[in-house]
Length: 246
Length: 265
Image 1: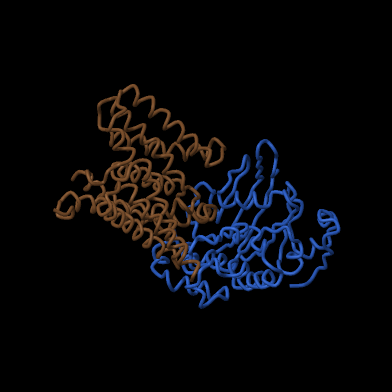
Image 2: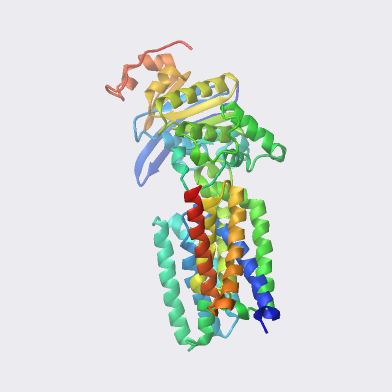
């Protein structure tokens, strides 16, 4: 059996005494493309932050590539795209697209850093932004900025990509292109976990769904999720899901 | 004889250039971290160190250095653990620092011209040792920014991703705080405690206005810092003005110019 890329075991987390996550267990295997969904305040982003060590669980354990989180040092194996990245870009900072993507190579092994220029340009080409390297990040559209941050996460050639509501504040057409790109990356072998509150994403793009509402209420294939009235009831009236075949 | 025939003028220029070139790029990182007021608060604390030096009849510069570096670390710890707004921590530090300095200076009975030299500075009386210290600071700053500049940018721009990428964020913040404290203490004799924070922030702000990349921004900040010192010092000599005020006013002129350049571009 393959070693899980991410293994969450009975994780609980409380913030100011309020329980945000309760005994959540979740495994992500190589090649998975999973959406972590749930209503606002369900603990999705909290769980993702626990996975990358930004928050520490009150109880439970987290393993990355078979290693306890506290002992894990091979961070180049993980690509991370935080929430609301477009909000990070302001009119003051004169950061070029090249410089932004190159940040993803900091702390990576020396052989990778030695190929800095080639890797950055390749990552930009991969996300459809070849030729944008000298442009200022602040001069790009929200959708393009989104793809620059995706390139930053990809530049170190990670094995798993973790994204926290990456398309917030981006128009629908740009969102669709973004998810199509994620689908391509997944088909090339990249493991992906994406946090979203938009269940329409589940319908159109991912293979698996993990649904969180403080506890993990569902984890399985997308088709099964679409037929499950209990979990769909968490979004009353918002969407009507229709299953499709990948 | 014109002032530039005197060795002390050139010594002042060398020390000032070293300070200005160091201060500009460090200021850029402080601005990006919304931390422009940190050097201002640290100047108040450095004043405490100076007053303590007078009270103990020790070395004011050394004591100011120790107190300022420790305070910079303390601000960081308070922000992370006490759960208060960042500017509140800075405000508290500035107030307490100045209050303690006033009390210590009173106890040391040192309300005299010696204190004024630290408050307003005078680059023209900078010593050979202080010039060497400023040159050492320049080398140290350039070395640190050369090695850790990109990581500092990552932390300043997107701390969450930097943490998720396994960067030692706390160590990088400590480095920035240490560089800030060193600049404050070494700069206080040259441009004075009341104006050193301006020399750190204004050239960086000007560079951010006109730069077309972050790398270019750091170089421009150093250039603007150096130009501020050279221009201000020259203006002070020609127009018989206090050097520290002229230096900071010159940097203010550069900032206005940079705003204009950005508007017309």
